[in-house]
Structures are given as structure tokens and as C-alpha cells.
Image 1 (cartoon, rainbow, N blue to C red):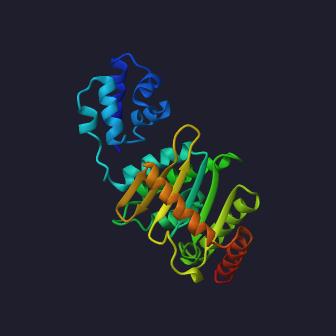
Image 2 (spheres, one colour):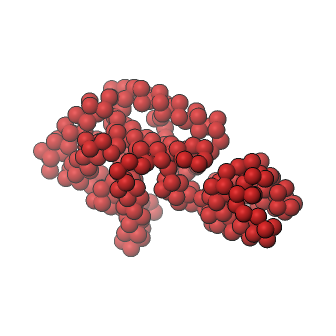
Image 3 (cartoon, rainbow, N blue to C red):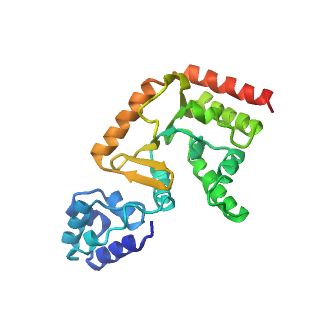
Length: 264
């Protein structure tokens, strides 16, 4: 998401002699919401943009020139990545790959090597650095609280070869065994479940409403409408209720890692 919109909002706010908090109070939102818009991490709703126009006497400029909601996946992902850094709780659902913040270096490199159209080594390595930087949010021993709900396909799909898979699964097990994350597996035997068509990240924050990020092929979207976020939370909870409990999930992870080690 380019940040021309956020820069322009900031310039108008400062020209009006308003702090972020004063503008937030006038438009019935939080200060951090204004900060996220100015920083290019959020796109305001049409209703919020109209209130910003009213508060800043900018006619209908902010509501008429909202950034496109169907921006490229990379743009949405960048916004979601920034939100991820601020979250106090993250619940991931993964259908095909281990969630980015939990990937090992070798696994991440193998995933990024599948880019289509193909990218050069330099671009792949740049993306790898970004991917590994995301994982640093787990360096804090407490925040964010992270749950990973994995379709069994994530464990069975051989990314990068047996040794890479074994290392990746052991990485998940270690995080889970020290209590840093919780991992749950939705087994193949379950059949259909309410998250079967999506990759989903749910995020909660200290100072703003929860959000969701969903991604598919050439499609990424941040959801912040309360009704949509709540529905996605319900879907996640329903699927979680059908997952293997933590102890059984870890047992399956360990058994799968052993299988990969035997075939290495």
C-alpha cells in the first residue's frame, strides 16, 4: 500500500494544528488508528474517511481518493506484516505451508523458491530476510500469544525435502514444548472443515479492535469490519474444536518428523 494517502492526511492534520489524539477524538476513533492510516498500515472505511474530511474541512477528498481495496497481495501483506508486529495475540490457520512467523530458514527458502513467476536469487534472499525478521516477534517470551492451527496437509506436503521438513517440525515442537506457542492439527480424517478454503490470521491488539488477514492466489485482504472479523473468529473456533488436542497434536508432529528422518 503506497503511503501517499497517509502522508497527505498527516499534512492536512498538521496544517489544521491538530494532534493525532485530537483528530481521533473528533472522528470517534483511536489515536493509534490515525497513526496506522498515516503510516500506511491501514485504509480507513468510507464512513471514517467522510468523518476525517468533515474534521479537516477537506471537502470529500479523503473519502473520494481512498486507496484501492483490491491492491496487490504484496501491498496487503506488507500492511498485515506491520500489524503483526503490534499484535498481543495471533491465531494462525495454515492450509498449505507453515505460517511465516514459524518457518525455519531452510523451509522458508524452499517456500520462496516456488514463487511464480520465478524471481532471481537476490530477490528471493531479500524476501527470506523479511520472512526471518517476522519470526523475531517470538523472541519475546510472552507477547504475542500465538496459536497455530495446521491442516494436516501442512505436515505431509514435502517442502524442501525430508530433512528440511523434519527440522521444521522439530522447530514447531520445541516452541510448543516450552509453552511459547500452541499448535493444533486438523487431521485428514476430519474431512471438510470451515477453514478449508482459506489461509487466515486473526490478530488482537491492546489499543484497537481485532483484525483478520486472509490470503489466496493473487488475493490478500485485511478485514476490520467487526461483523466480518467476528464471523472469521467463529469459523476458527469451530475448526479448532474439531482439531486434535495439544498433546495429540504434538504426538502427531513428532511421529511425522520421525517418518521424515527415516526417509532422509
